Length: 277
Image (tube, rainbow, N blue to C red; front, side, top):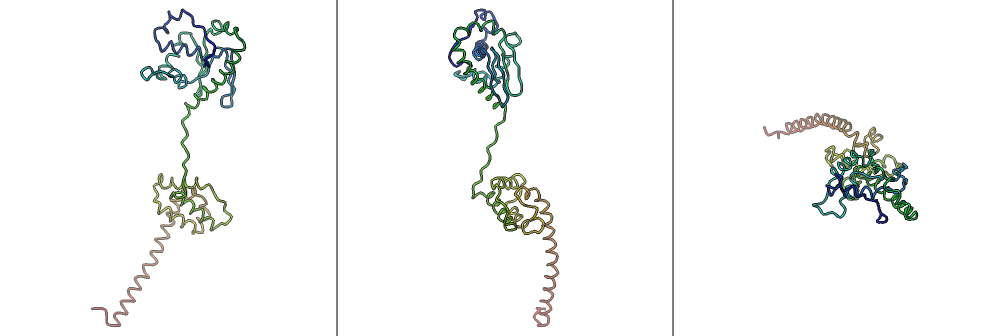
């Protein structure tokens, strides 16, 4: 877009066109004329060289709408749907061409050279300066158009040392280190995030995750499998099944012992005559 220097030609016959009847459409058409490159330029966009000829400029729906609304009060603001509809109207009336892809649009003013080029010869030095500024502006506009179409990335969580997720991640690492002193310290922030997912997404109780860390690293088989918080999360259900089986097996072995002890105690009382019967 124009940097505040130079000018474009506006023909009087515009007063007889449909553009003249709508202030916003007139403003948009003037904006297109002022944004158009004087003599063409090229710039890099996302590693790709884009060539813009004279009378052309690069933009996006959000970018050109923002430029339309700059300085306007709320009641005079326009939405991007209307702006793009007006641009398509200009195209259907043969005033410009629009070539779009998923990242940006190149808009070409029809008959630009016929109506505007002669004015470029007035000051070659001024044009060279404006061309350089146009290159920078168009590059920024293209980048802004790309950024508008790309969903913002969510910020990475940071876990403090007193966070329960960080504490459990550190505990898992220390237990693994007991089995292998050469185990290198991992990214505990990533491990903390995996622990959080176990609790918040998988709905594991913190206490159970804590106990599973102990169990997995004491088990001769699973201590060689669970070597990260991610593997702890993936193998959690399998380990739960095995741990429950072991607990049930131990409980069944203890029950006869308890019954025999009760019988022995009863026999002793009988012998001593203190059975209370």
